[in-house]
Length: 294
Image (cartoon, rainbow, N blue to C red; front, side):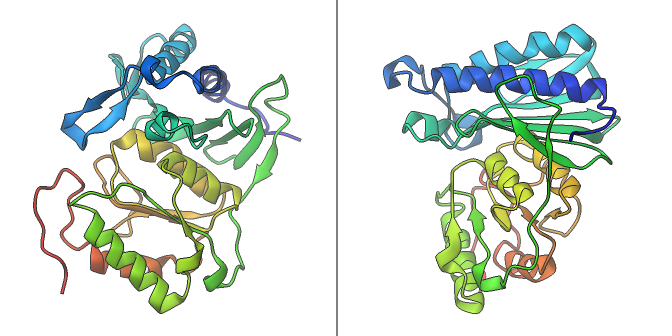
């Protein structure tokens, strides 16, 4: 079983993600002093490592070989090209986890054509998992390593789970701009819906989207988006898996959004209402001042 008539974009995306995730898995145990960690002051002191760059170096030639004129919008490296055809790449989502020796990191990629996401793929070398979607053809999972890429199994969000048993994933970034709002939101969810015991964070937005698409988690909320690279792969994966993903206004996520929620689709509006209350006026983790809602 597998996806019928895969596009050239999908085949290239899968090859690129497999190559990048292979680099991530191979360098995961690199000693900390070899990671060459630097911090990006412009977007919240988030770290970047040599692995981020080497993953990109493995992926770029594969993309450019078949699509030499397309733009590559990497989180760490950008290659100019036709902006109407854009490859949106997060070379390593979960750099802090790698620094701590935690295997909760993935490689994410989305392909846009005239502003529409047509392909998405996420590679997880620690689970030998390759999750992907093509617009209108569903979401799928196969093994990351091996030659059976297209012998994939269809995946979907999980519905019908009682609210107080749903697995909720919450973005892990806590600083003076996010901690208070996040704490109030989590408390409200726990008190009103008795689901606080089922809240987790794995420190990777794209991993969270993938877990919802697989049906292993039911809700994922991100309030500290580092860039469109953190969101784009999840948009198509969640939608093609039968779920719902929106920004804080209830609209389809778009570049520049800072608060995004994905779910199986059940009770999405109710969760969104709580989120809107506590994040009213929030402008992302670059925002330098806010007052707590009353």
